[in-house]
Every structure is written in structure tokens, then in C-alpha cells.
Length: 409
Image 1: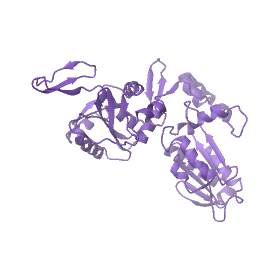
Image 2: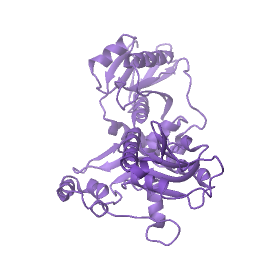
Image 3: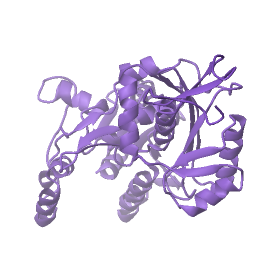
Image 4: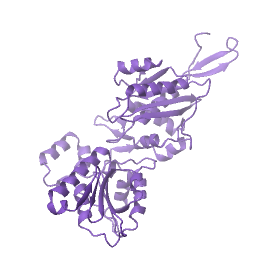
């Protein structure tokens, strides 16, 4: 659908009266991720090249752009506010906008559209079209639907199930989807927003927890730090991330988050993370069971022992959420991390169990490392100095408030 509309608005409309001499107008298709962008661009190329009259309009073609002889350029990009700078945009098609980031960052769905509007301001009746399957009740798509659906005004909201928009859709496929997961099928095929999804944490709670302007806390001598890693292979979509935190009284403090985005060398990632941990005097890191013995051995070669976590991601998120709501967590002012935390979803499974997960096609690698470090820090023993104990020494207080003497006493 996005490809067809992009070709139509590029070749069927005239823009000579709004373009200055030598100026080129842009029809921009913005996709949720790179794979979708590549698929849409292939469809656009196919549409243009299979119709002789349209093929004759092609002036030049690059990897993600086609320039036409009518001074219009069709561009397909991932959703990013930086890509719209310097263009005269005659039309924007926001593909699958329900799955764009909605967090408090410069690349959220709302901020991308805000960045687009100046580029469209010199074109009368410039088209802004958002096409998507509905998903959670948040973000630009939900806000627009909630404000304008069924109401008169300058914003048209069209809602229709897949079997009406695409009569060739096999009826059996739709029936099977509804039988297997009716809630998901109502969203995917029935064009209904999901009522079973809730946000993990509110923006207000997150804002209170963030130390504004603090991107990283340097190590302090004598302080006990704890690390959590989310490892990855380097060639897929997953990031390799590290979180470091410590405990101060009842508060869990996040000191550092780092990420290696693919493509990267897992060996090099382990080496870099081990070097960072040593600056915080850390000799042990906790993580999941990814690659099992390889990860343990890789960290061991750099003087770091690797321990498998006893908790699932969902359990870690739930534990940190309790502390966030009670204001016992201090976060860093780290936009990618905050975006991932805000995008996490709480949903109820068919068995009635609540789980916390990232949105479809979303990342939670930074969130997992940060919450793992925060949970371990919150439940770690506190060390306090008591001169009256054996002439001076430490007593550990564990995460449950029980007292115990160190072995040397």
C-alpha cells in the first residue's frame, strides 16, 4: 500500500507551481526498520519499471532513492528525524507508525513528525499519511485516533479490517489467526487497538528517577559495584550491553550502561566490557545463558567470572518497577535507555500471568542490562563500618534487613 501511494503522489500530482527553479520535491516513505524500508523500496522500483510510461520518468536510481524527470524524488528511509533536514517534502508516508519508538527521545514518533512539518510548510496541501496496523494505546497513531476518529475536521482517520481492505486475503488464514490468538488477530487483521497492553512505567515516574544531565557516574574508591551483561553474537539484531550499579541505603543507583550494536566482534565486546568493569573494581558479572560456556570462558580470559542469572527479564523488570514507583531508583540521563524502558509493555498471557516485554520488533537490550544491575544492586549486602566490632570492621546487611558478621570476625 505504501509503495503504491508513493508512486501515485509522485507521478500523478503536479508540483511545478510550488517548486522554485532547480528545486526538487521529495516524496518520503519512512519505515519502522531497515528490512521494511528495503521491501517497500523494491515494490516502488517494481511498480515504476513494469509500466512503460512510468519507467520513462526515471532519471536515476540509487540504493534508497529514485529521481524522476518531473523534479520529484521518491526516498525510502527508516524513521529518523535527521533524514528530513534540507528537503522540500511534498508528501510523507509513515509506514507502520504504531511500531515507531514512542519514548522520551529525539527520535520518537511525535518528534519525527514535528521535524517533518517545517520541511512540508512551503508546499500547500502537502500530504502526511500514516498507515499502520494498530497496536498499543499510545503514541501518535493512538492519540490521533482518539482525538479525531468519527469527528469532523481536517484530519481523516480511516479504520477498516484487513478483509475489507484486501478482499483477496484468504479467509482460512484469518480464521486460523483468530482461533490461535484472538487478541493479537483483532489487532493484526481486525484493525483494533490492543486493550491487553499497558505501559511498563509512566513518563512522570521515569522523569523523577532520572538525574538530569548525568550520562555516566565515574567509579568511587571503596564503593561496591555490581555488573549485569546482556550478551549477543554480533551478527544478528541483538545488541551486547552492560549495566553497572551500586546501592546507597534503600536506593539502587545506575552508574553506567554501554552497548555494542551489530555488526561487532563478540570477543572484542567482552574485552571492552571487562576493561570497563575493572575500572569499577568488578571481578564478577551476571547475565543470561546466551552461548553458555563460550561467554563464561571469554570473560574468564579477561579476569572476570560470569554467573548465570536466576531471574527472567520480566522478573527483573517487575522488581525494578516496584522500586521506580517508590522512588528508590536513580537512573542516568541516557535517551536510548529511557526510550527502551518507556517502550516496554505489560501484558497478560492466556494463562493469566503478567509478563513484561519489548514491543514487536523493539529492543530491550539496554533495559535488560540496566534493570539487571539495578536489581542486583538493590538486593546486595550493604557494608557499614562499626568501630566497636572487633576493634573496627565491617558488618554486612543483606537485602532483606538481616544482620550477619563477616567471616573474619
